[in-house]
Image (cartoon, rainbow, N blue to C red):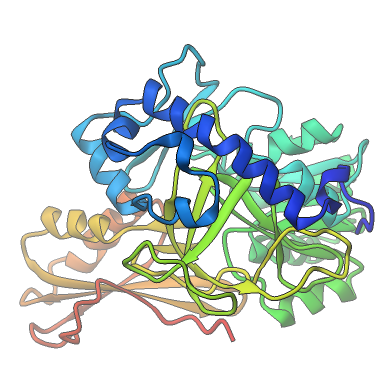
Amino acid sequence: MSNQPYEAREQQSPAQREQDLFARLPEQLHGAMQSAPGWAAQLDGIDAHSVTDRAALAKLPVLRKSEMLEKQKSAPPFGGFLSQNGVTAARVFMSPGPIWEPQAPGLDPWNGARALHAAGFKAGDTVLNAFSYHLTPGGFILDQAAIAMGCSVFPAGVGNTDMQVEAVEVLQPTGFTGTPDYLKVLLDRGAEQGRDMSSIKVALVSGGALFPALREEYACKGISVAQCYATADLGVIAYETEAREGMVVNEDYIVEIVRPGTGEPVADGEVGELVVTNFNPLYPLIRFGTGDLSMVMPGQSPCGRTNMRLAGWMGRADQRTKIKGMFVDPSQIAQILSNHPEVKKARLSVSRAGASDAMKLSVETEVMGNGLAERVADTLRDVTRLKGDVELVSPGTLPNDGKVIADERDYG
């Protein structure tokens, strides 16, 4: 891992960074209101040029991801929040929900290079990228970042494990990017086949929890694994450094932690919802509520980077849940129900099976046979793009607690 920052401003004084961000913010707000009708409506009556500090920013409304989904349905595809200033999207993506995301122009539009550098990647590396390139931006986020750093990328995507293992032996990549548990899948399969997997020395993972035991297992194999926190809408928001003490917030983002369900910032050290403002010229997001829980850690990182630190991902403020790197939304469970009138109620439980996420859909029904479980499992896979078990239970069996998705994973 690198003790030196990717660029000097990562070590600027916090006061200077704050001054720079809020000097740029009024023009970003003004431009968004002028070029995107969604932002004109969202920020109606607000004087953009008066928003010059965190107190003023905290008075703006939070736009939560769940609200964006509804706004996009009302005014497809982007809900009126895409800038109409002549900037063209390089790509357009469809994430589960569905929710639509554009790729901004530029070599590293999701700001991932700093995270790769902090994880120990360097120019000239070959990187096996096992994030999905299908429909969603996951694969492209770190693909573009690695290219910006001067790396070569093998766009492996998800699945085809035997082919990926062969690619590792032939290409000898030094780096891996993907979900925390898929690296173990690759290494285990390589060991079964007697393949040489020893070239991989560094990894940057996201889309799931990196449990301490799994990180230690990788370390014993000589692989240094760091995490980053990224979303399809915003890119790489924060990342681990060699200090392994929380995640340093990336440059060019204003991060707040607010009380869930409100726009009120909480004190440092208090868990709340992560709200982010970016400086994206194509898809400006202002006080965008991610639905993820985290908290600000006190002090600065021992690595020398001076931006605020987050404690990492600490769960969801709503029931939208990330499973194997993909979000599953309660609206998708409703879609499954609508396809099967025999099913009266459903609850998706998420747990851990070894080093992987596992999900089970329990459905209340009076039909206990006739291939219903298999048909519901097929619909679950088609709607969420993830495989899961289906359990048929009698009406009245599921808890009456309002939960459609129950995350039972232990992140302790």
